[in-house]
Amino acid sequence: MDIKVNPTRMELNQLKARHEVAVRGHKLLKDKRDELVRQFLERIRKNKELREQIEKELSAAMARFLLARAVMSAEVLEEALMYPTAKMSLEVDRQNIMSIYAPKLSFKQEASVEGGEDNIYPYGFVDTSAELDASIETMAGIMPKLMELAELEKAIQLLADEIEKTRRRANALEYVMIPRMEETIRYITMKLDEDERAALTRLMKIKDIVRAKV
Amino acid sequence: MSTYKIGVIGDKDSILGFKTLGVATFPVVDAPAALSVLNRAAREDYAVLFITEELAQHLEDPIAELNKRFLPIVVPIPNNKGTLGIGMGKIKESVEKAIGADILFGKEG
Image: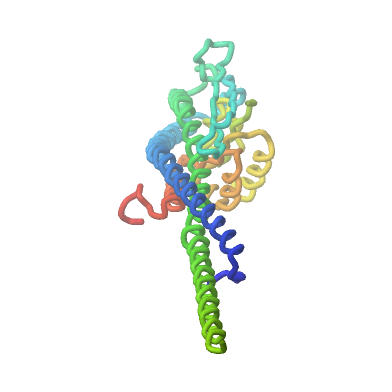
């Protein structure tokens, strides 16, 4: 498991420098991961609530729409919905969450000219049923929430990816890179000490021999 | 900052209601058709694509692939038969991926 190195002082200095960088990097990554998780948790609760709410409302709206479809003939329904008067314009901006770029949506519903600002019905009321009106009204009400949900879910997916990546990196440093470096540093230090002791004993021995001869 | 479009993919009965809101609707009947619509829409300037869960359950991989990108955002929605719990499942998946354990949905995970 140790790295193959020459046990020299030069190598030791280099390794020590790398070790220091690795430790600092690990700390930074850990901080980043903590903050990402905090951001993630902040959003995930909201996401869950929003989705629950939307799923309920949307199912209801669709059920109503189905009712409308049942009481009206398919042709009339098609005709009524053929030309939507409302126009949706969506603008996408970038929001920066811990240097993850997630889309930020802002949308405007442009109502038709005829029938005033808040006319969301693209048809006259003669041939159509009240169920259709109700269904479309709920749909229009859900739309802003749906946009919010889309934005949130995207941010959460991107965050989850990033958290996973960061955690892997932090763990690789903590459990592989740094222990390995420490091991190698210890090995080199021991080797160097050993060499030093060997040199010392050799010197003493030689001194003895020289002294004995004189 | 520029203007994008919104699209809905699903069976006709479920998505027709969106049409009145000025959202582009793509009525499709099966998953392969939905996939080709999805891919086409992803190349064009659609920022948000809603897809009914009924179709989304057959298209997990392509949707996951799209969701790694900045745009579009693919959001599963229930259809008129009610929810299949796929959108919720996705949230749960994200939690497990990020935290390592399911902390939101309680005991069963």
